[in-house]
Length: 327
Image (tube, rainbow, N blue to C red):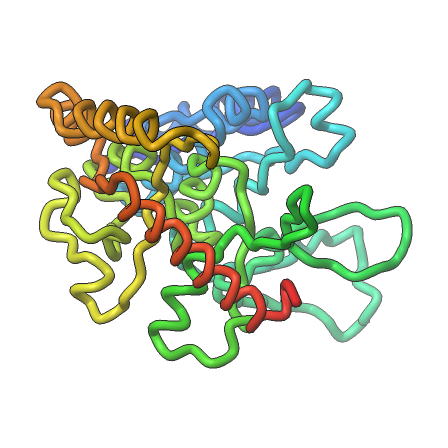
């Protein structure tokens, strides 16, 4: 008999443990004899997800978006024990949750009825199918294991006792936008922009602030969009993206770096170092390097920069007091 022809490839998503044994058998015995099988293969085994920092999961979801159909095998959502067992970099999120969020679809639950396994409810002769939107997935939750009860907060406290929140820049923007209750904003701190970017691409977070260099690849691939430039100037690699100020939000939130000197140095030494840093910042070599890496032009020197830093500290302190982070 002739095989069924496939015009569109099927996204084939491999999984973990026994599914890697059973799935090839199912294909060989039940599918390949009858179907001219065309697939685009993605390995979502736990080690491959770990090796690619879960990028393979995102790639698989994008493939399903493209071809409109996919078959996924069971995968491990690692708990702490699995992290240690497989020597993973981190406790990765559920691939199911990532894919569902990216597809923005509907989850259907349908039980399989077997004749020799009778349901507890005798009148239940047909399966009940439950459908829900994938938004608000349980896998988006943050999990923290504690030994005792207490109060959960996301706060950084420096050695002087001052507390700061990771998303203080986002809160400054929110305040400018007229949001009254800043505590109503849900946020998660990350130790690098790459992890935050992954959360946004997978649909587990709405937005994040970070360096242009962290997102340039995803921007060019069309996986993310730039909302605003948090500096006074445009960034060439971001095209026509407007600054926050141009959009009506008077916020500067650049991830700027600075050179500092002891307060007691002489005026001559101070002026020397200001001139030295200025000469580097204005050089063609630095300009080329800055533009290549998607960095905004943000140059301030001497007393002008000192005033800028002090104003930044005052603004953050005022907002922190409003949020009752500090007294």
